Amino acid sequence: MLLNELRDYNASLLQTGSFKDYCPNGLQVEGRAEVRRIATGVTASQFMLDAAIAWGADALLVHHGYFWRSEDATITGIKKRRIAELLRNDMSLLAYHLPLDAHPDLGNNAQLGKLLGLDMQGRFGEQDIACLGALSPSQTLAQFAAWIGGRLQRTPQVIGDSAKRIQKVAWCSGGAQGYFETAIAQGADAYITGEISEQNFHLAQESGVAFIAAGHHATERHGIRALGEHLAVRFGLEHRFFDQDNPV
Ligand SMILES: [Zn+2]
Image (cartoon, rainbow, N blue to C red):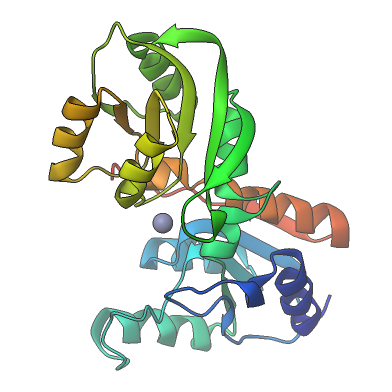
């Protein structure tokens, strides 16, 4: 298919135009016009570029691309090396951040809920990105944490009483520790996100709501992979997901 068709299809599928985000969503670096092989991965790191190029990808699709609002806008150092490699190999980079967290089926949060066997019951948070759902039957926090560790292949950091029964669960993939208070207000028994900050410990202690830091990378592997699989089926593309081991 043509790169422009891929770009436009994704824009409409993920409704990229309706999100306020910290980075451009869609085509970030333009490569060759025709796309047959797509690689997917969580972050457009050097590792991911090398893997996609070695495989012969025409386009790399990621959750974490480049050109974040807070970063230096110049193309120097690490950023220069990455972008030079993309351009030298004529490989496109497409990035989908918040729109990929939020998509009701392919999104990181929908996929995470499915992987953990949570019944999705509602959404909350900025732009309705976070999810609320039920764990049935309920489990103790210790059981639930072990289950999450097995499903994500990473042991989570857990703050809370291990004997507490967990039924109502709130979750948001990645670095969404800032939504913890909103999750508490929603009446959740536990909140799952990728990363934890110092104040989350105290909020967990004082609210009695468990905080589960299950890994930023580990909780965001599933959306971009599901998008790649969807595109492969829809357009007959070759797709491969590359996973870089990242403990954070
Ligand atoms: Zn993220």
